Length: 214
Image (cartoon, rainbow, N blue to C red):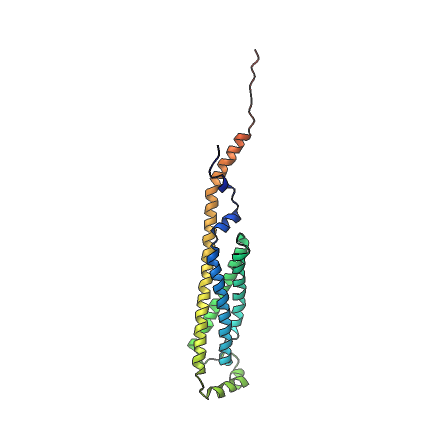
């Protein structure tokens, strides 16, 4: 007797992971993370050019380092190791770090919006540095409102950090969903595998014939 579930019983865990893993959706997440990383770096550069004395100790560049590792890891599980749960777990760790980095960037951007004239450097650099003096002289010409332009850059960076945080949270949810789905499939297949093993054992048992002597 041949069971219809015979092929399902021998599916490996990596194959089940590949079947459940939503590759197209993760590809969109990876592309989004890559574009947002570039935008955050560009906005940080623009913000520092507008007024370096009111910068965040290069926090945009520091957090972008973690963002870069995150989108590279996400692309890896999309195109190269779709069947590897270990690689997906590594990408999960990177996305958790991205969540932390996004939260830090959100905090500093919020602080600047609350205190737009605050200087996060030492008092000497804030008051007597050549860059600070040059900025105050240049801003006096009123060519355009530098403070308002910097606020726009910070708001845009704040939005990018919030979206980056959301994408990493989505990756975390997808990973948990995939793990639960794969484990549930493995549990449902296990009873059928036991039935097939018992059937094979019965087929392999030797047949004993009895001979009667008259």
